[in-house]
Image 1 (cartoon, rainbow, N blue to C red):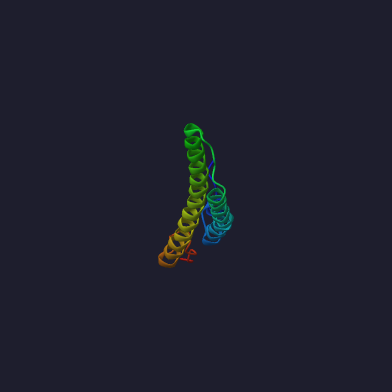
Image 2: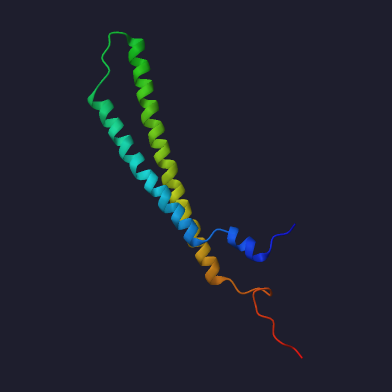
Amino acid sequence: MSKSPSTRKSNLASPVKTLSGALLAGLIALPLAKMSTLIAQSFAEHPFISDNQFALKISVALRTLVVGLMTLATGIFCVAALGLVALSIQILWQNLRATPTQHEVEPTDSL
């Protein structure tokens, strides 16, 4: 079963869809960035104190892992937002440069 041209066109990415996705990704990245900063500051203000070297090494590893994962999540959402903005620019550019195809041009009456 083939899809009609109007159904195929509605499934394609549009500048509005990509910009709204970029806005959503950016809005998710902002609290993640703030939270990773707060976590890093909290870890810096409250050092783990112990006489056991093994416990200190595990503490450092876990703190690094937590801050690293939060920073990675922030970076992923930032890159996704930038990529979606670039995609919307590309779609706009392609729409401006596109010439109408035979199916899009209205048929002329040839009698």
